[in-house]
Amino acid sequence: MQQNISSDKPVILKEEDRFQRYDFSGRIAQRIINSESNDSVVIGIYGAWGEGKTSVINFIEEELKTNDTIIPIRFNPWRFTEEATLLVSFFNTLASKVKESFPEKEIEKTNFFSKKVSNYKKKWQDSKEPLKSDKETIGELIGKYGKIVSIFGAGEAAESIGKALSNVDIETLKKRFEKLLVDSKKKLVVFIDDIDRLDKQEIHSIFRLVKLTADFSNTFYILSFDQEMVASAIGERFGEGDKQAGFNFLEKIIQVPLKIPVAQPDALKQYCFQLVDKAINENQVELSESDVQRFVSEFVENVLIRLKTPRLAVRYGNTLSFSFPLLYGEVNLVDLMLIEALKIFYPSHYEFVKDNSHYFLSSYSSHSYYGGHGDIETKKKEITEFLDELGKGLSRREKESVKSLLSELFPRLDEVFRNTFHHNGHEEWYKNKRIVSPEYFKRYFSYTVLKGEMSDVSFDSFIASIDTANEEQIIQNYKHLIESSSIDNFLHKLRSRKEDFKWETSQKLALGIAL
Image (cartoon, rainbow, N blue to C red):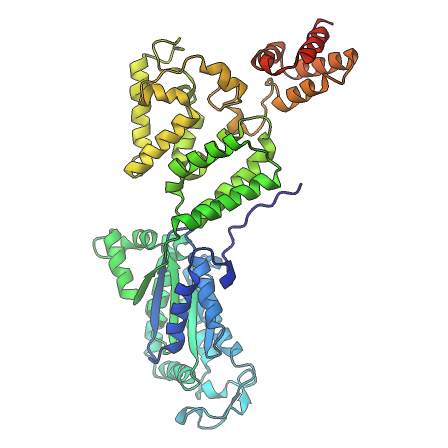
């Protein structure tokens, strides 16, 4: 069966809205449409990575498309690595989009700017006359912006363009451009998304660009970014050079700061479980009722608290879609789902577990043989200190949740946290392919049966074939198993499953081994 990876692509349409953001976006769009002021306005859409900022931008644009007085412009700063290129491209985009917005309207030739626009007679795309002075058009003006940037260099771009705007001819053209927007009742809405993914210099360039040009009449800028990240990135340039300086700078640029609505926990939970179900169904994974109960209980109690954004839900669904087909039948499926949850929602803890198996697989009890990693009390102190350090960025409840999740995966930790000793747990863990079993631990991180290990899928297939196979077939299948692994591994697995075999199966198995 073909596996489909869930896309992290932002949504566009109202019916795709899972987290009640469309109404919020619609209100922003209507405020823009209904605005009677000619002033330029800069709107900030704040949200963390993966929280859905781009979807909100899409929703706003969808609503704006219903009104023909709006000229929406998407500008993608990711495409440009230099400030000069970025600024030139911005102005070029501005000019071309405005031109495209008048494909059918006709413009009066004479005295266009001395009276209101009532009857357009010449198409904008055929003539630049309405915006032409004796020297240059608005397109040429924007070209001049670009030339100025190129001549003076990126570092002096904003200052150079500012000086150019003080030129009488250029200022006249700027006013004519604004008058065209005002008289035609057109509004520019410029979207700049993913600002927080740029480097520090590029972020600063974007805000200098907006600060420089945001005084165009009838123009709205909608900027989306993680406020904390951007403030940290640009703060070193201003005031005290810290994050607060960055916040102070943003307050001067952003006139309407808006935080996108937080996705409700129930909606995120439902979305995440839908993606988990999708991964299970597409891979034809079979879980018992007790397996489902165990997973849901652990996820709700210890993982859900960390499910903050839709992106995390998508990443978790995708990692299950990847791991299920690689390890189905070879590991305990609930343990697999939980260790993958640890990877996505507590990544630092996951890396620590992967690289320090001795803290999670061996006993901390004086009743059990201790395998040479130092004094038991010292080891307890070490694991406690390591977990405390890993949990520094977590809330108190998150710290308790990740400890509980680790204890579920690695019951040996109960001997640290609860002073509980697990008698004879190893064989049961081995039989159930648990991650706490040393024979299975590495399999959960390598996503394969390592060389020398015995595949559970192959072993189960061998056992299932015994009842219908003849003696020669049993011998050949047995030889194939031990050649790919070892006799010790084969016998160990036999012993762990001995109570599961029918008497007739055991007889044929014993005879085949003897032969």
